[in-house]
Image 1 (cartoon, chains in turn yellow, brown):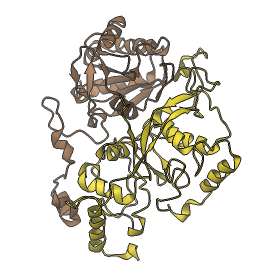
Image 2: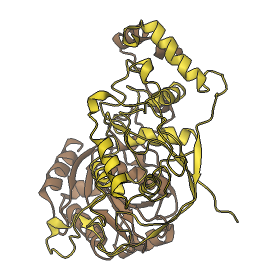
Image 3: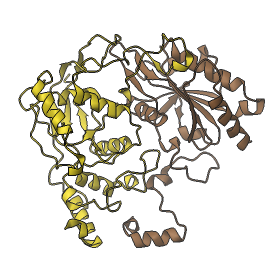
Image 4: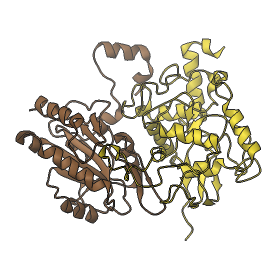
Length: 272
Length: 203
């Protein structure tokens, strides 16, 4: 049983996992896989225009997205080479007290069996730092929502009640079962595990607030939010996406949770 | 550093009171005379590339040692943002004279596309900001990081306008957020009391 392995063996295994990923002078066996998404006009469930009730389709620029969420083994390789992001070293202003709390030590995963599971218990700052280390960034909410609108065959399956039901069914799985390994079926873009595995950080998680426009209330106490359009969500049937928004909007950047991971994205420069 | 891998060595060092500090600690710019490392919950742990209203690079940690009122805004905002400036001014003006001199104000734009240094300069002038006030801008990435630390939420709409939360944060001399107010248009006792306490503590 992996959990009962001695400290030395676990550490050797952990460093071994890191070596496979290109640390300790061993060339990476495989660069993390990204896939290019074409972008285009997209209707978000969040209003993007000045009117809080009217839909304003927006252009999503071409971008590349990591095929799979970042795994525990990949994050271990990152903290091996970036000691400032190890548990106990990263300042609390960037990571809360539960940061990587499930790991046996700052350089040991919870179990070898979990190496291919998405890393969780990571803050927004830590996730960003990881992405920066591979020349990437976090996807924006729009990019994530656009990629996650696809099912296996259609780029926008959101109006299909059966697709919606499948997503909701995934979310009904009891958390006690533990996280599955990455590598689910690819969607129409070739991206895996957008649904049914973990929640994912996005770059602009702190742009997803849903609140009333208080400017007309006349009470200075209520002037917390400025501007129209923070008010509503256009497609109230997209429960699964709304759950994501509700979760992300409730977080602060140092927060970590056992079911919140991330993947990275890259901008693709426009052709001249 | 190899020793950090070894728990027993680490514990031994800890017993001797030797801190294994984060590697970035040695690279941190220090305020003049400041020998003590920044606390882990200081927002000055972040080093965004900021420019002030005069186009000079601005190091957040240069505020160390002074209580700071911090907020975020964008210059073309006509409704709430001018009220933030006004509310902070009222708060500062209500302080005893000695404290009034020691307070610093940090106003960070979340609209780097439009808030150039020139625009910041005009905004500072329009609101009568003196040299206790620093208006700053950064690129989009650092702006998002700074907002994340200050707990400010903002979203750029397709029209170029912003939805944003509004708050004024009080930072202590070490850059820790010690109070926060969402109240505009009047002095908030929840900000004023801890601010006075902070000024007395360091007087």
